[in-house]
Length: 636
Image 1 (cartoon, rainbow, N blue to C red):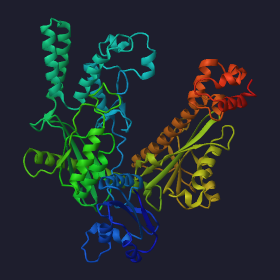
Image 2 (cartoon, rainbow, N blue to C red; image 1 turned 30 degrees about the horizontal axis):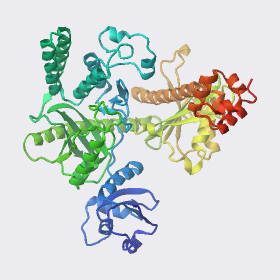
Image 3 (cartoon, one colour; image 1 turned 60 degrees about the vertical axis):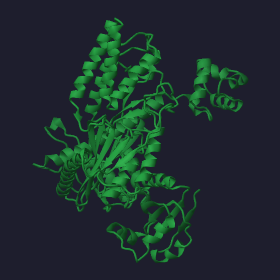
Image 4 (cartoon, one colour; image 1 turned 90 degrees about the vertical axis):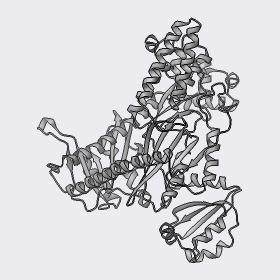
């Protein structure tokens, strides 16, 4: 059940409508004067919680005082249970990213290993983004090198297939991997599903940190094979066991109980916060990750609680025990939500049921602990040291970026710090499929969520100046809808492109709204040894002298724009090559197109086909057949 109360009144008048808020669990959204959501919270009794914000009798902490001063409007959503309120709160925080909530940035940059257990012969692939798609994910890993090294060891030890699905279906003989004894070759050889799935389960045990259990399992199989006089099989199992034992020697044992657990600790310095997660699997430390938390007024316990909710929302492995540095609020509710999520997610160990129900597996409970002494408290201290180290590195990196921006402002003689830099580049092939790409750097770092793509619509032929003019007009010619403006617009090209950009800004009434610069490649025929940076009103390029890192940074921005535009152009060109006239027929999708081409083999035969026969094909209807006939009537 959901019910909304939405009033737009000043804060002083909001007390009157508090009396009309029903009691019960729910979520509340606080808004500032402009209507922007600045905080999302949940409560077991939403009326009592909302009243507490505006009660002068209660002492508020710094965060609540700062928040209440900004509230001009609010909205409440009632839910059936407190658990529903917790889930809804997480979804709303993820969607709106309110200023006063703790928000965990998406870690797309960390690679993971993906196992699609719905496939008959599953394979491990490197994935850059963890999705809720029914597959099992392992990781994320700290670097691409770490994930590739792990995958290399798994391929060598467990011999899973390496080829993609299309190659796997069409292969006629085993590949080189099988010849090197690194693949079972289920594509061509008679490899039973049970045998292959056993290898997959062993790989899953290894990835879950169950190496000691896996070694014992392989040892027992080796003894049985030896007793049965299957000496070749026993030798293979012996080599696999030795390889795993060498891997185990490199791992650090941190607990004696061999339980899976995550350790979450926090470090803070001024306005900066860092949360570190240590992964202990089967009692062995497998790795760690750290996550910077945007500036917040929340307490350590609030940060830990928000982090735990958001971190395990996506398809990460949830251990049976989560050890935290500070006890989060509503610990029991969090444990219940995490337990439900853990028991619903596929594990990769139940290969007989591709519907991921994990039948026969008992319900497992997730516990959140805040130890004060013993080996678990030592783990928390270890996590805190990792958080402190990574926080210092993070602050040093931010300071270096800030110094770079400060020096760039001085070198380009700008009035403001270039916190937001936008750069455009074009790509085409002989004037066809022309596109323009815009990249954005915020405080010296690429912000890919802000990138934009532009299909060139109004220019025929090859004209870089016209491409640039169209892209700039579409980006900056929409008045207030064009906000936010950059502090620095960097265009790829020399004085010509720079003059085009300045003319477009004058036409749009944006002259002086932000700074503009052009970056041109060096002309080696003239003896130039470096790229050139041009500014309006200046005939000669800027000389950076000993601050060559500033030029390198601007080159990096330009190269990223170049890469982005080329990638978009290639995607458009590939799509154009695969385009069929059938794609222009209303109501004809991929399935119907394949059905027609598979039966008739050519567009000409589809055009000449009887309409009733066409309508009788799989997935086709009479209206779809008429649509095809109408589209193909002028086809020659």
